[in-house]
Image 1 (cartoon, rainbow, N blue to C red):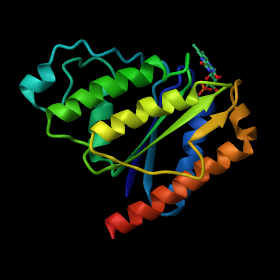
Image 2 (cartoon, rainbow, N blue to C red):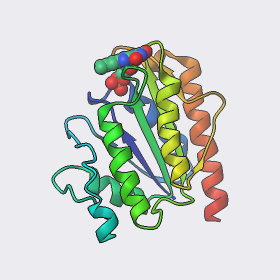
Image 3 (tube, rainbow, N blue to C red):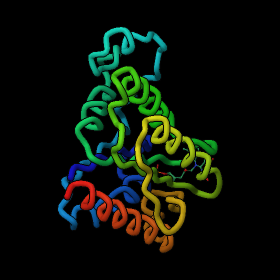
Length: 191
Ligand SMILES: Cc1cc2nc3c(=O)[nH]c(=O)nc-3n(C[C@H](O)[C@H](O)[C@H](O)COP(=O)(O)O)c2cc1C
């Protein structure tokens, strides 16, 4: 069982990473190999609509000088993908949007690379707009023919400063429940 988590905060070791690590804990306990990538500081570029991925169909994005092709490769080899973003103006961060657009287009260009993998989104938020960001990431899973795993609430954690989200008891429980549900389903699929 391989799980990939992508944290798209613009700052390292922030609330989004804490939420994702909390989801990964029960997954690791269940025996999953989990990796977390932080996009902070990597400046992934946006899709330039060149459609070279559709022409070449070689499983890569034509923009070679940033982290996105590594994301495509790791998403392709994972059984489950967790996407995490802070809420920026009621939506995902620029980093997450770049990953969605470019990994999404490469996936579609190559016969739906992420088809039937498990997916879940988590969102860090100070106050409002998290559900819209959550929806943005779920749209990626749905058009990629992925299977979305749920939890005991929508997967949001509340906090502003780095680390504050750890004090959101319900948010943290939601993350643990999500990790347990994903581990349960992965074990069934991989049995
Ligand atoms: C550019 C920017 C826009 C933000 N927009 C919102 C927003 O629309 N709603 C909100 O509740 N918080 C907003 N925030 C606060 C962050 O979502 C919040 O601090 C979150 O915990 C950051 O997660 P991180 O620690 O992983 O970076 C914004 C922060 C930044 C830097």
